[in-house]
Length: 123
Image (cartoon, rainbow, N blue to C red; front, side, top):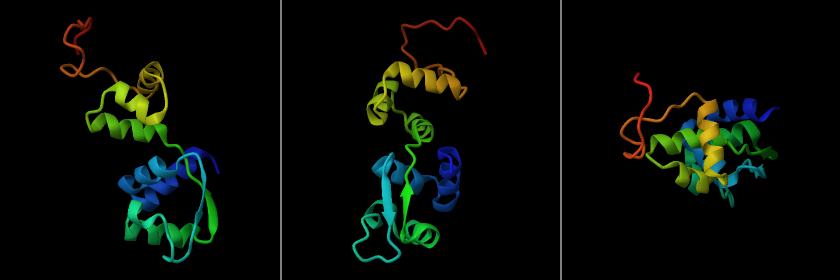
């Protein structure tokens, strides 16, 4: 299963907050999903409902947790983080974050950019 498909499936299954928490904590790794709560390391991170849903779908198997960089970057941007902060959280360069946001169709938000910068085009 591709990372994009798995990301979409996990986001639908868990909801966005739990999916982002899972990707932030375990992204890029294989994670064993237990079918019971005994010694379940996911419970404090995801919460009871998400753990039950994850165990119901993937219990007793390994899951390759996607990095979900674009989803996390959108979330961090919505939370007001700068590109530098997002770059540090995702392990990328600021230039990489700029390119990612351009690919996703984001434009600089007036008022949030450096006040010394001029806007060449009006909306």
